[in-house]
Image: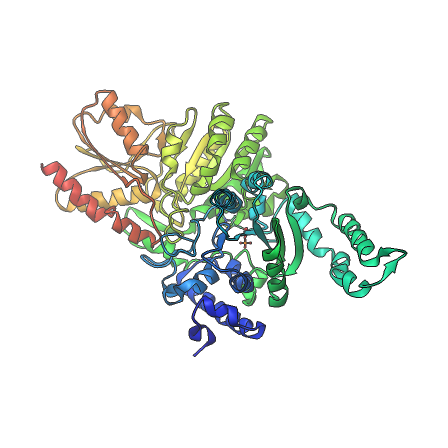
Length: 624
Ligand SMILES: Cc1ncc(C[n+]2csc(CCOP(=O)(O)OP(=O)(O)O)c2C)c(N)n1
C-alpha cells in the first residue's frame, strides 16, 4: 500500500516529516500524471505545485482558512488532499470531478475559478467579510506569474492595501504563462529570483553578527538596515511594499523546509504578506519540464476532437488541420504580402494558432499577457494608426473585453478583426470555458459584423475577405478539426449559402458544428421523405434579408451552438416577427444555463442537440 492510500487526508499531513512529505509528493505526481494522460487536463502547472500545496495543507487549516487558486487549473493536489482521492480518476469526465475548483464539489473549494487574475479580488471580498464579522481565519491566494499580467490583479492589490485586514499571497513563479511569460513585471520577477547576491545575504546577518556592537549600536540592526538598502539596490525597489505587502522570497518551491518555514512565518504575521515561491513547471516529468508550454494542457487524446468529424456523409471530408492551425497559417500567408497586418494575443499564441505568425513575423506579433480587455483597446489604437490588427482570442476569454469591444472598437467603427476560437462547446474544461455566450453579446453590438465559417476553406476565404473590410469584424469558429465541404461559397457581404435545394423547411445554421448537424438532420428527414433546405448562415450579422423575406409561410429552424437567449435564432425570430414575415420558427440552441464538463458529444446528447433528436422534433412539428 502506498503512503497516499494509508493516510487519512487531509489531517494526517500535519503529522508527516519532510521525508514522508517527499514520498507523498512522489505518489501524488504519479497519480496526476497517470490521470491526466488518460483524462486530459492541465499537467505541467499541477506537477509544479505539489510541494507547495502539501506545505499549505501542513501549515493551514482548510476549509476554515480559505484557499483561493487563481485560474484554478493547478488545483489537482488540493483536490486529492481534500477528500477527493477516490474520485480523482473521474477528473474532467461527465459527472466526475471538475478540472477547476468548484464549490458544489467540496467546502475546500472556496470559490469557482477558471479565468485568470481574479484571486485577489476574491480575497478582498473575503477580507472585508472577515472584518465585518470579526471571524478568525486566514485568507491565502495562490497566483501565478502569468496571472500577474492581468489587470484585475492590480485593481485588487490597490484596493486591498486599504482594507486593513490580513491576506497571504503566494506568488508561484515559474516564469511561464502558457508560453513564456511576458512584460515588465515578469522581467522584474526574474531579476528577483536571479539576485543571488542578495539571496546569499538573506538570513546570514543575524546568525553571524548576533551580540556584536558597532560602537553603542547593535551590529545586527546596522547590518539589517544595510541589507535593506542592498535589497533595493539589487532588486530595484519592491513594488509589493507599495501595496502594503511584506515580501518574503524568493523561496525554493520544491523544498519543504523552506516552504513550511516561510508559511509558518506568514501565518504569525499581523500584516499582509506576499511569498515569492519559485517552482519548475512540469516538475518530475521530464518532457513537461523541457516543454512546459506543450504540456500546459493536454487532451486525453487528440482524437477526442477528431471523433466528431469521423463520420463521412459524402458532402464533406475531414481536414487534418484544426481551425486554429488554418487560421494561424492563413494569417501568416496574408501577412507576407500585407505589411500592415499585426497579430495580437492575450497569452494564447499556441492555442490560437498564432505561433506560426510569431515565428515568421516576431516584430508584428504582440503577446500582451493575460489581458484581454487591454488587447482590445490596444488593437483599436493600432488600427487607428493604419495597421490591421487581428486579435485571436478564445470565445470565453473575450467576455473579459466586452466594454472595450463595444466602445473602443465598435463605437468608433474601427477595423479590428476578432478571431474567436473555441466558440461553442469545448467539452472537458467545463462551465468557465464553454464558448456559448459570444453570439448573444456580439449580435447586439452596433457596427459589428459577425461571421461563422462552415469549414476550413471558408475560414480562409473570410480571412481574405477581412483584409479589405474596413470595419469591426468577428469571425467565430470551434475547437478542433474542420470538415471540408464540397460546396465552395463565394463570399458576398451578408449573403447566406443554400447547401441543398429549395423546400418548405429551412434549416438556418450558424458555424461549422451546426451546419454539420443541420446537414445530418436534413439527411435523416430525407429518409422519411421530408425535404429540407440547409442554409449556411455565414454572416450571422447582418442577416441575409432577401433570403429571410423569401421564408414567408415556410417552416424555419435555426441552429446555433450558443445559448438561446439573445443569440442567432432569437434575433431571427424577432426579425421575422417585426417584419410580418409569417412563418413557423423554432430555435435549436443551448439552454440558458452554465454547461458542466463532459465530452463535446456527451454535451450535445445531454442537451438533445444531436441530429437524431432534432430530426424527430422537426418531424413532430411539421406533422402537427
Ligand atoms: C482570462 C483568461 N485568459 C486566458 C486564460 C488561459 N490560461 C489558463 S492558465 C494560463 C496561464 C497562467 O499562467 P500562470 O498564472 O503563471 O500559471 P501556471 O500555469 O504557469 O502555473 C492562461 C493564459 C484564462 N484561464 N483566463
